[in-house]
Amino acid sequence: MHTEKLISEIKRKQSFLCIGLDVDLSKIPTHLLKLASPIFEFNKAIIDATHHLCVAYKPNIAFYEAYGQEGWDALKLTIDYLNSNYPEIFTIADAKRGDIGNTSRMYAKAFFEDLGFDSITTAPYMGKDSIEPFLEFENKHTILLALTSNPGAFDFQTIKSKEKPLYQSVLQTSKSWKNSKNLMYVVGATKAEYFKAIRAIVPNSFLLVPGVGAQGGSLEDVCAYGLNSDVGLLVNSSRGIIYASNATDFAEQAAQKAENLQQQMKAILSKKLNANLI
Amino acid sequence: MHTEKLISEIKRKQSFLCIGLDVDLSKIPTHLLKLASPIFEFNKAIIDATHHLCVAYKPNIAFYEAYGQEGWDALKLTIDYLNSNYPEIFTIADAKRGDIGNTSRMYAKAFFEDLGFDSITTAPYMGKDSIEPFLEFENKHTILLALTSNPGAFDFQTIKSKEKPLYQSVLQTSKSWKNSKNLMYVVGATKAEYFKAIRAIVPNSFLLVPGVGAQGGSLEDVCAYGLNSDVGLLVNSSRGIIYASNATDFAEQAAQKAENLQQQMKAILSKKLNANLI
Image: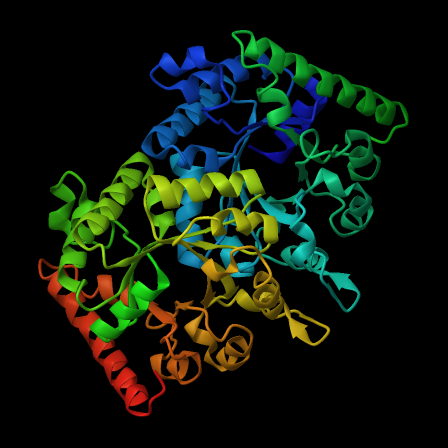
């Protein structure tokens, strides 16, 4: 998907919500377990109930790999369903991949070509030649981990060298990589106070923001510093939406939670629009 | 597998060779393409021909994911074949995973429990709580990226802070993580001059060493500083062994390449043994 299309969908829907599809068989309604592919049926119901409230879905690949071939089948069914029925939706393979060049090329092929995702999350530790193979794909996006939402983020990402923490080196250095226009960045909502410094380095890039909801991040704080004139944010919620209920009304309850967030986003966007900021 | 068992196998076989199973359908002998699972048939032939010369196999997960469900099937068939027929072999899922805690737990479940690998490679960027879920598994090993073999390694891994490069912080910090006895580390063979500093921080840990062969690293250089009294090295070669030939004799040719490396390892081990160093 072209970035322009993503931006126009955000404006049309008044939402920059991304819904994480982290499907755990122990948490989904038990009536689905009798069906041929419970994971896909769960996703399908969630997607049908929420697609008008969000602009992106983010299956977390670990949750599919944990179920082996059955999980992989469900992932394929899910992405095919999204691409066939809701082509206006931006799809994110949350995979945190990154390896030597020829291996990253295989991951890019797997997620961009074979599965048909619009984007993938990647880890920066192995540097330039581990990410550039992903960036070669036209209209595909590579979402690089910058500052993550978990406690361990402070182990290495904030180590300072010459007054600059590592995550800032990651942001700065990645801008020099070939096809860096295809980069977006993961920045955790639990670290809203860092957004100002991050926006100083990557003012125009999209930021994928996990950590709102279950992990405790605040939407208002993230928007205060993170929004740019293209909106430039995709705020993800996974557990807070998809596990709103595990009864037969789970999809409606999920839609309710998604709508709560979408309404907050709409209010924030209206304020910005009125102030001519977007 | 218990580390003691790995060490005794290394001593018995006089080999610390790991063979990378990075199977690319465009590179394997064409007569295999007619079979039901060409990737598995290729792996099976390579394993049958080389298992007495090496102590570990390392399927590179990207190469399996690139073939979707067919690839995932082949991976499952391969690990099942190894576990059933060669239980003395140490198996490594080269996956470079790492995510927030509940997600890393799903990856650990996928690779340790469902697939049954002895170990997995992981990326440190997200810190402690992204790795500890892997370390909880008894007799399973987590091989953390420290200093990798690719050019991009110098983008971030060698950034210095208070005179200490990042990869040394990764080594040092990871030792404080819970169950850190289950850690091993990836250290590229292309960086042999760094082994001395690395051994000063992790004298007793096993190091998985890619980069010998296709990437240009030297076995002698790696052994000069990397060997410890338990041997403590697993040296990987992938393309240099498995693609020695793409004719019908591919497995014999692979065995020949593996034997060349094993003989070099045996000579190095004998010298150390004679000097009472192992």
